[in-house]
Length: 409
Ligand SMILES: *Cc1c(COP(=O)(O)O)cnc(C)c1O
Image (cartoon, rainbow, N blue to C red; front, side):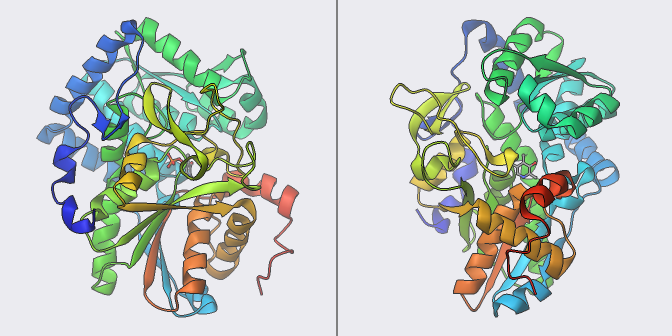
C-alpha cells in the first residue's frame, strides 16, 4: 500500500475487537475482561466529547508547555552535507519526554470515570515518573510496580516518583525487572479495578491501549506536520522515530500516513544481532503473544520472550506495538536498526553541534537522520527527539567519557 491508500485507514483500524490486521486483540484472564471493556467504552464516549477535548487541550498548553517546537539543526546538517535535519523537540515537553502526553490523557480519562487511583508498571522509571506526575496533577493515588533490580539501578527516578507522592512497590519474583512488574501491576489491577485504572507505558498491551496511546500521542505528528509546513512550505522527505514499545513513533507517524513522506521506525541493535545483545523485535522476531496482545516478538522455540538489551533502557522491550507490525506488513513504514555505537556518536554530535543533550533512546532516531544525511545529499528528514538526556549523563560519561573516540571536531 502507498500513502494514497491511507485516507480512510484510521476509520478502519483498529477493528472493534482491537485488531490491526493479524495483530493486536486482547488476551486477558476472564476476571479482567469487564475491566478492559469498561475502559474501552469510556474511551469511546468520554474522550470524543468536546468537554474532554477542551480540557486536555488546556492541560497540554498550560501544564505541559505544548506545542513543543520543531527545530532546524543547521550546524549538524552543514557538517554532514546538504540534506537538512529537523527535530521535533519532545525533550521540551514537561518532565522531559513524550510519555507525559498519554499519561495526562489517561489521567484525565480516569478522572471522568470517577477513579481514584492510577496503577502502572515501570522499567527504567520514565513511565513511572510520568504517571506519578499525572496522578499528582489530578489529585489521585498512584501505585507504581517496579522490579527490585530496576529500583536499585534507577535511584533518581524512584526518588522523583516518591517526591511526587507515588507509592513505589518492589516486585521481588523472577528476574525482578520489567516483565515481572507488568505481571504484578495486572494482578493489582484485577483486585482494584473498581476504584483504579491501569495505565500502560507504551502503545502495547491489550485493546484499547495500543489505540488509546496512539491517539493521545498523535499530538506529536499533528503539531510537527503543521510546524514543518509553516517553516519550509513543504513536507519532509522522510520522518523517523525510535521504537521501544512504539508510543512516540506511532504518535509521530500516524498524522503523516496519508502524505507522500517516507516513514522509518528505528529499533535498537545494541551490541549486534546475537540473541540477548539487542532489542530489534521487527528485525529478528516472529509472531507471538506477550502481555495480552499479539504482535512480533523476540522469542525462543517455546514462545518464551528472549532476553533483550540496548544501551537505551527505554528501548529494551522484546516486542513492539501491534500497529507497527501491521504498518510494516502493509509496506507503509520501514524499520531499520541502529547500534549502541551509532546512537552514541549521534548523542555526542547533537550535544556539540546543537547544544542539545538527547535521551539515549532518542539518539537512535538522530543517528538514523545522520546516516540518511550522509547518504542523501539533498532533501530533508524530520526526527522525533522523544526526550532529553539529563537522566543518562552519569552512565554515558562512565562508559564513553566525553565522546573522545568519535570524531566530533
Ligand atoms: C520510554 C522512552 C522511549 C521508548 O518508548 P516508546 O513507547 O517506544 O516511545 C523513547 N524515548 C524516551 C525518551 C523514552 O523515555
